[in-house]
Image 1: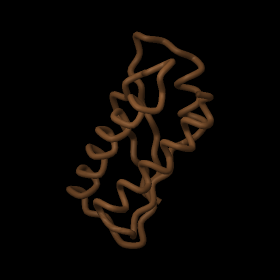
Image 2: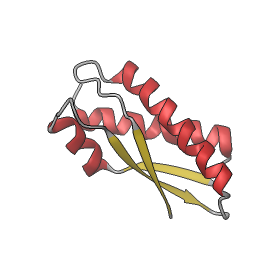
Image 3: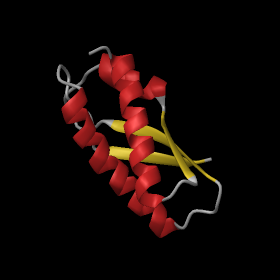
Length: 99
């Protein structure tokens, strides 16, 4: 499956899962340039870091942000196992930026 299709599917899945678990005030968006760069320049010895923007209508507590990061990290790897079959790189870290 082409990388841009994987990106679009993963973005929708993560956004839906976070909204169901933590509330509709959140919106999640993967950084498309960073996601595609991770999959085009494959170095199996480096850690895979994904950058994610979290939009919220309300202030976010640090404890809730940590829970969201762990939830996204688990679900991004689970979804990539199902969607991405050619190049399955495990995401080791998620960098969440609050907008």
